[in-house]
Length: 327
Figure (tube, rainbow, N blue to C red):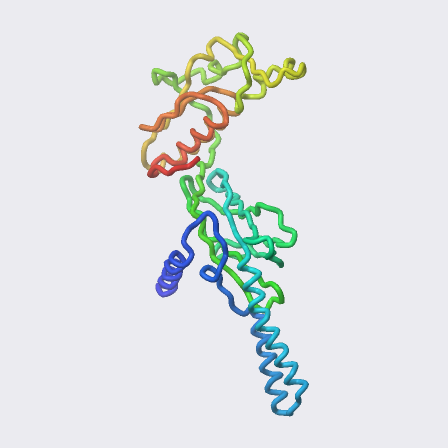
């Protein structure tokens, strides 16, 4: 058991030196591995058996067949390498999954030159796992999404991804283990609960956030629609007249600011509270509330829209971690 772990650690360290993390990888002799497949070994045994048989019986036809198959074996070796070395893999923008969900890692697969086109099926898997999907390089549609499981919130490194090919005859397996210089920001898993908000003075809102919702007070004016605003604020009559996307602005109690606050700063209860806050953020955002978030020394000012939702969920995901840059 200890030997297996030690060997796995040594292999990982060797891979880190040979194939360092990158966002754009072109396959070449430094990061490609090639070895006969099971079928390739059986094919080689057949060549040896035919050679021995032809030698014993002094049959030139059998010897010619043995040499022809051996030559085909060697030609397949070079052809397999040249086909695989023409690939270039670029990682795309990774989404933001919730803990427990799978993150889709988009890979753009291209050829390094216009003259050289890759053929055959490309098998993709997480390092050490079974093949997750196979794509036909002759009918490739970019990007290819690789599912990476997540278990907890926070920044998570993308595991090595194994790409392999048996083109052209299945005699050789070409493969590589790529490490991408990118991380996945995992939001907390939302836990359904009642929404608890606070006012500017820090007092808990006993009546709930309903009275603070923008859009249920007196109509004030029309303004230009901003991306992320709720669709029920859109003045559809003006849209139907061809005046573009215009939003209704309301006045009244909506001017009051409401806050979400983390009350537990440590211990096992903290993760449960972060999951509840995640649900509250999603709930308030879906109903068009303007709200802020307070997590200890971290403050997200009151706002609304898609960008504000991401800033709140990002703060929840990174709470307790060292600062990590994410767009």
